[in-house]
Length: 394
Ligand code: NAD
Ligand code: ZN
Ligand code: ZN
Image (cartoon, rainbow, N blue to C red; front, top):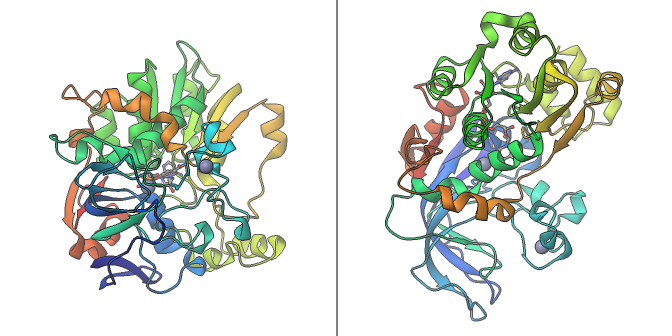
């Protein structure tokens, strides 16, 4: 089969790999029909190289048709249409029972001290081959795949794998009080969907912050009050306070993570991620003038006293010094983590209808053949051609 594989920093290629096969009787093989490109893939493309091995298959947002099932699978049939959650959860353990599927105790990556395994996310998360490929082996076939109806185009359901549950959890964790204001930092696919979900759930005032024209325009067209980081610069927090009675936003979502000003973090500092002792890595980052916490610092600044920050963006460092005094003194609530996909599926499925309140049918800006994925990674990273959500069709 053809699959998108990692070969080095900003070097991904479409290679030929052996087709996956059933290994456990509870496995299924999916023929992938659509598969998303995510900001999380950009971390692998740019920053997390040290965790990758040449030839690793990337991708964690696939959907498709069941091609084969293991001998012990009872609830899935060949031909079923399924979306695959990005994190791998068994559905049976204590954590899955708590709705904390991203902490699944069956698939936890203990040797790395990490939570549930992820598709296509390197040995840091279990070394599981990813879904930007023609076929994918999926474990826990009776529990993990989300069965969806046939009929509507893939886009109707595809974003259940990551974007929708991530945004839903982001808004849930943001705990916007009635009549309150939510500020969303970063209007990539995740921030954009966070704003949509918040509006759908009744948040009247959503402020969106980014520095890419198409992303600002797209959010503004759906009623988000946008602020351009390029225009407001160091005074951005003042602009937010002006919109919020001088106090700051009741809740803030950081949908950026370890990215500085829309550009990849300087390469020297990237090599420090997870490789050097804390102090040495921090020194190196300071030397190259990189502040990986830029968006989070902004969140801490613009949240009102006693407000909540919901951290959706991924930070991969072990060294980032947090302004603890400010966090403590402002009495900030901080919640974060990978989305517990299955937990939010019952809330989301009823919204994936012809009425399309979240705009999923037109959410993707680019549909690209998997064979052209390497160029698409570059385009998405550089935010060219109005790319917000890119979907590959194997
Ligand atoms: P993206 O890279 O397309 O979006 C990031 C956006 O932030 C871009 O539009 C960029 O212009 C903007 N930005 C950069 N620096 C900024 C700053 N200082 N202030 C304001 N905006 C800034 O990625 P995405 O797909 O939208 O993902 C966003 C983040 O969410 C990533 O870190 C990704 O890894 C993470 N993520 C987390 C989960 C989860 O389960 N928690 C799931 C999916 C993605
Ligand atoms: Zn993703
Ligand atoms: Zn589990």
